Length: 252
Image 1 (cartoon, helix red, strand yellow):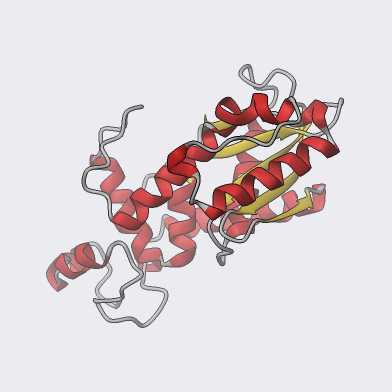
Image 2 (cartoon, rainbow, N blue to C red):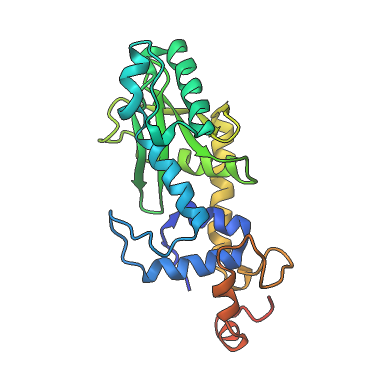
């Protein structure tokens, strides 16, 4: 099982909150994966591939359409983009953002990977919000989900632990977190306080301790093995009772 000093990714953290057993499967698979900067998406489910494509478009947005917005011209969508209503919503949102604070409109970083001794993750976007070097961590999502705030606070704790960061020399503090829901065109943000982070860091440490206990890794819900929303349902089916007993998970 896990060693005390294990490194936890944001994706693994959220997986544990959704279902501890899902976390166990993911962590085990990640151990066997040779991670590199180039990913093989050939075996990904269609829904995941669609999300990856949307993130790539959002990642490249400022490079592709930034000059138009800065010149006060409405971006001319590429032919393949013209029928994508969610893209037009994002353009309208970015134009509004540019008009409000043009000096801080361009992101400091997009798809920015961070790793500390205990944690790692890739942040969708980091925006500087004032001349003091304060920043906002932003995630792009299709719709609201149960653990959006925990995900953003995980990134806040990770980035805060690495400031000053050589790759983000202008950033001195994470002051806000935000999430943009690209199907609805809605953006929500909130301030990060000392009290919020103190409480979250305590919570994160408690979660890490639970992860070290094999008997805490149980299914969070009563579900059949065909639970359609679980990406790990097929793997879960293959884990037989004998193997579960060997790793202390027989009472799930």
